[in-house]
Length: 312
Image (tube, rainbow, N blue to C red):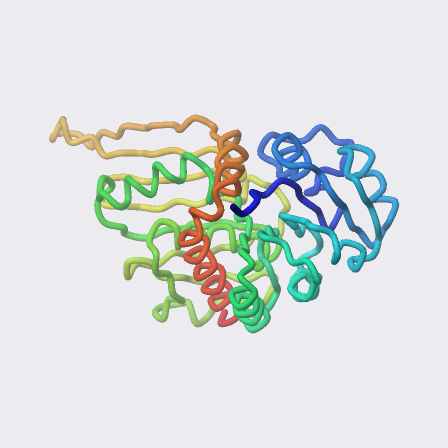
């Protein structure tokens, strides 16, 4: 009988790893805090060894180092990559060459900054039989599960159009919403009509239009770092789904046809379910073997996201 996953190691000991003195928002990612009660903290690696030592002390990791080679011979069941996006590819590649490869690798999104690098990593990990999860954390949100069912069962009618506001860079921020579009509609492409071709041609900050269910989804970029500019609205024939407050709050507006004389609306505000993200993700990781088909589908989406971003 194969041994179940029992420990985890972290590469990149910044805020996402849990290495911060700031009281974290429950919505924020903190791998050490979320995993320590289920798996044993094994090793933490950062090129700044003081960061690695701080994380080791705070969460009682067994080892800390500034050299990735130091964990190549350890039996890390899970390796979490929470470093800068630019370093993801080299780290993922080196992990695949470890003498003792992990059962599961969890990488912060996006897992590389290049389509061809992403494609190469997925191919290698398939050959090595390493399961790779890219952590777009809304994939584990109970509200998203509910919305997916509403759309699947046509409770909202037909999609008409959508609008997304994002700030900072297109790779790290708009990718959250591109992933959500894949969750909701399965197939997403670059829109080939209208003003899409007159988009602002700057890789980090661009306006662009995607297509889902043959309908346009407009993406607008804001220079402001105000998280209120991080939102999505999807307009359907029977209602509107929208998220605001940096994607934490979701709201459904339904057309109420009970009174034909007036256009009435029913507004449903969803409960904040960011606590379910941690719980659902942990369950998913614990049952990663049963979830291999889902992981494979997510990897397909991961590559499709990179394909879209490459062609903008």
